[in-house]
Structure formats: structure tokens, C-alpha cells
Length: 253
Image 1 (cartoon, rainbow, N blue to C red):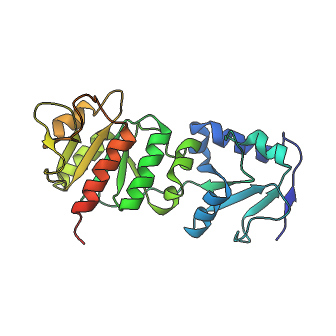
Image 2: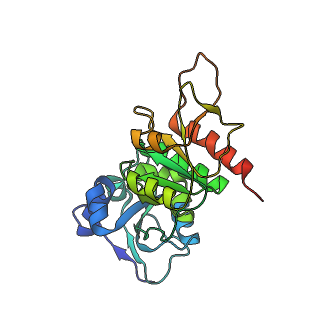
Image 3: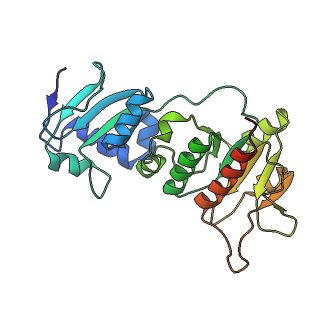
């Protein structure tokens, strides 16, 4: 397998990778994103992600890379100069953004509504993958292919397809498919999540703004996660983990 060697930080490939790491618009324009680290690369290879290029530093190329992938060896300081991580890894790779899943919405799934923190979004996707619950993101959530989101998924991004839709499209699809919508909320008419039916779509809102008015109006029930009265709220990723556990616990075997 041919290996290219690049030493200049101004090489077009390295500029391309650096821009992919920093710009959502550029990721959308090119249809590619970057993963960093050997563990994430192994997950991508295991789950047949469409890898375009692997850049590495060291004596030997990463194992398991197919013949049609561009392999590039660079000095460690050059790799560090393009990395988005405080402690750069010895490998990173460029991967094609997969096509979104087609067809109807699943009958039971989690909705993330305008969550802005990429670490939270990635952590929730990792948890949802563990509990085998599909996830739908509103189009104003944090970018799915932000480097922080990718890292926080710990490989789940390659295992579980994620649907991204406009809020109104989610609501219309739920109505068309007779899927009930539940929202997590602190209000007087909430139902304890431990006793509430959890079939359908369950919406987690952002920590700052909560669930959007459109979902509140469309919801058939408001859910509460019981907690100490001295606590005002939970981190969005923690709240989502509780909801996902309850959804998994009720899922028919």
C-alpha cells in the first residue's frame, strides 16, 4: 500500500483537514468530517464508515485500512498543528458524511430539541446507542459532525444512524404516523416518568431554553424526572440518560 509523506503544514490536504475541523459550513459543503484517534478509527473501520484519508505519525500505518484509502504520514508536530485536541492523537481520518436514513420515523425514539453543547449531544448519542433507542435531532441542535460531538459519541456515530429534521417536520410526521409526543418539563401537570407511558417520541430540551413551544403544544403528556426539591434541574445529557434507561426498560424483548 502506497504511503505519501507530507512535511509542510501548508500542504493543501492539511489545510483541508484543518478547515473541516473548524467549519460546519465547510463540512456541509464537502460532505466530509474528521475523526481523531486510533480508537475512533478502529470503530469507523469496524462499522464500514466511508473513510477517504488517514493521516498518521509514526513508523507504521494503522492496521485494517483498505487499499482505496489515501494514507499519509506526517511528522508528529505537523499532525499536532492541525488537530482540534489539547492532547493530539497519532492518527486522524477524513470520512464521508453518511446519507440520512430514509422512510418513516421509528415508533419510539428520543428527540433532542435545540441542544447547543456538542459534548452533550455526543454523550446522548453514545447512551442511546447503548440502550438501542433511535435519536432524532432538530435542525438547530449542535452540529452532529463537530469534532467535540464526534469524540463524545465514542464511536456510536458510526453504529447508529441519526435523523435530523426540522421541528415542524417531526411534529407532522408524528401526527401522520399516530406517534404520541411527550416532553420533559417542570410544571404542575407533569407525570412521574417512572409511571408514565413512554411509547412514542420523548423530547429533551436545551438546558437554557427548555423544550420549544411547538413541541409543548403538540405534546400529549409532560414528564418529570423525580429529584430532590433543592435541585432545580439536571444536565441535558444526564436527563436524557434517565429517559433512555426508562425507554429501554419498557421496550418489549
